[in-house]
Image 1 (cartoon, rainbow, N blue to C red):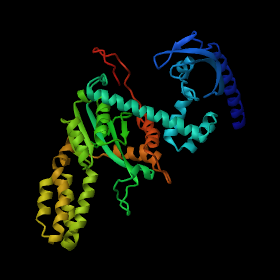
Image 2 (image 1 turned 135 degrees about the vertical axis):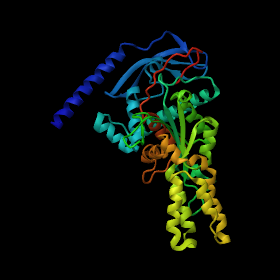
Image 3 (image 1 turned 90 degrees about the vertical axis):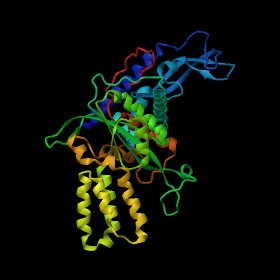
Image 4 (image 1 turned 90 degrees about the horizontal axis):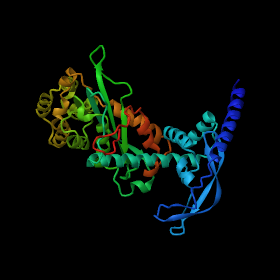
Length: 423
């Protein structure tokens, strides 16, 4: 059965490729003796030239008119541009397939998937180059779109129905890079050097319901992502643009989730000043356990009970009581600096730790969605054993994965101001 399926698929693919080649041959690509060149001058017709193009139906030969510009010295084939083949040897359909598998799996594995599932044979290097080029193009287009949104040049139209609760979660994760990308950067390694570069990831999702136990439920297929190696201010622009596209301006309530990293709350204050800010409850517990370990030697056998009381206070969002209990401890002078640093995390984020109130309102208090994204979108593609990336290579491989990981349910619509509208 398998052999018959493969034989029939191969025959049908060959037939389809032959048909596609004949259809494309119907237009010679001749657009007159002269055509406009990108330099502003005219390019002269030279001759008809062939080009080998790989498609989803196999390789085909494309014959088209070729023009040359004596002013700038460049040649062009108008038909290539019309077919989406300018500067490319893969058809648009095949490039889309390559981009998907290249974003989801290492390039060697992606090459095997193309052969096994689609019957398309390409070298690993061609898959790598095509996937990274398309990924970088998406990253550049996304950054340009975000800059236009921030500058007020375009106005994203959100969903027709206003969102009840819109969540914006932020986090960062390190990606192993080649030494040239971390030169001069301090890191946590034993040699003091950095061996990774941080990718900042943001996820926007909505919530409209609770489960039978009163816990919040994320709306199905509502998560969309943005990611970048760029500094926090550039990442903030990307995230703001995505939130605008998702209808942040009309959401009944906006909640920003993150750990205690200061850059997260600076971006939240800048782009979403009216949002409710929530520190991830589980990060807060980790910090509290670290505080408990710090004071345990001085509390002796009472340390367990002391920590349990503080955990209960944290769960209720009673940060003043937690801080008061910690400050009453009589610790050696050598530990006071460490204690002040440990409780400073809770003092700084007290308003973001009103967990009992957040629960009563049906809010998420954990940033698990974005942390899972760091693992599934970034880690699963860019942090496998032995991988070392350049920034451009990692951006090209990961950008498409972040952009297509969730469906985008908003169609393009005209805007009355005449601005181009991104949705």
